[in-house]
Image (cartoon, rainbow, N blue to C red; front, side, top):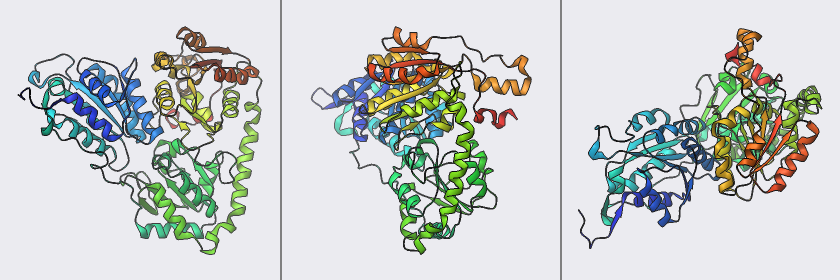
Amino acid sequence: MPDDTQDVISGGHLVAKALKAEGVDRIYTLCGGHIIDIYDGCVDEGIEVVDVRHEQVAAHAADGYARITGKPGCAVVTAGPGTTDAVTGVANAFRAESPMLLIGGQGALTQHKMGSLQDLPHVDMMNPITKFAATVPDTARAADMVSMAFRECYHGAPGPSFLEIPRDVLDAKVPADKARVPKTGAYRASTRSPGDPEAVEKLADLLVHAEKPAILLGSQVWTTRATEAATELVRALNVPAYMNGAGRGTLPPGDPHHFQLSRRYAFSNADVIVIVGTPFDFRMGYGKRLSPAATVVQIDLDYRTVGKNRDIDLGIVGDAGLVLKAVTEAASGRVNGGASKRKEWLDELRAAEQTALEKRLPQLRSDASPIHPYRLVSEINDFLTEDSIYIGDGGDIVTFSGQVVQPKSPGHWMDPGPLGTLGVGVPFVLAAKQARPDKEVVALFGDGAFSLTGWDFETLVRYDLPFVGIVGNNSSMNQIRYGQAAKYGKDRERVGNTLGDVRYDEFARMLGGYGEEVRDPADIGPALRRARESGKPSLINVWVDPDAYAPGTMNQTMYK
């Protein structure tokens, strides 16, 4: 035991010092007796402690904070049910390649395997859904292991890490000179790999000679902050660009190289297809939606992703920004980069875009009541400004929005990612508004999705975080309802998926926010503007047609 003359420090304070060294300026948490010494350390280090009503919200908020800021997020939860409540948020970050650290409490080491309060095998549970999971075995190692966990978040494609800290390890004090506290910037190397130079040259050559190239800019374009490099490539080489996930907004709407509705047509007819930072998962039809005759190139941070589920002609492992910049430089001065000969191809795709838009136009402008979801998402798209961060949290209603809503700036689109998690909306609003208080935050919820984490609307009120929230309310889990009708018939479409007619506008007002109900499509725009002007967290409850389904819902392979 240290004597009274020694400079001593507790485990919780060491954790806080390590968080500060990583640049973490706030933690998301729900309190518990196992973890309060971390709070004490955070107070001393000037780290804000943001308390929420559910641990899933804390984990989702840490994920969202990482996406917005480019810095790792951090959530701190208590042992047992506190940690298991956070599992969904960690799993979502894992599939979305989002760097965050979850710190969980644990019973005292002295009570190991004795049945202490809230004791569970957290590390065993977290191992499959994290890049690193461990127990802090000794107080002097607390800061060191926090830094180790952050380092592992950036191995390959980013992702979450988990640490559990036994209560006696966290609360104990050790001589300060016995504890390693890594210095800022001194324990992690750069992970920005420019890719294989020969492969970069080969890709440049492919694009220069391609007649009908297309590029998909996925989430890693935003993760690596590659907006400028991606924009320079598509403009210099005259390549049509499609965007998904967090890559949306890389090019602004109206840009001559920004395409959205003709993606399937492009991928069926292109001769060179470049996939950047998106795996061949269900969103890509596991690679089967790409023309078998096309030359396919995949660029990704993770070697394991390249060529998974579909053969490729060229794979490049590296940072999207550095790779795309190098490709542009390698192609420069070579017969105009092949750009001049691709005008007809871009015109062909623009015509396909226009055809798709005209087919949908009656629904986008529909005056029907109940309101057609296409009309709702069209109104939201018109409402967004260059400073609006858009968040989608839902099934069918957000599938509608994915075809219509176009963020106007990079990093201004947030959805759960490939895990398809419902309930990310409120915690993403919390994270986005705290990280970027200068930005407007607009969130579209399905009524089912909002129900999962909606009580933390009160947290948004408590922290005075205004945002414009819209609930597309059809009193159903409609994406599932469609599948049940398709598989089992109309007489069984309503089993287990029908919700009550909930007035979410009244819920918002009850908790101190702003709320309005909308039944007439002409009232959507004015209601959104009043929500913006209210300066409060808001919910506009829009009653949408329960019998209208998004094409993406109707095309889901699980229903066929």
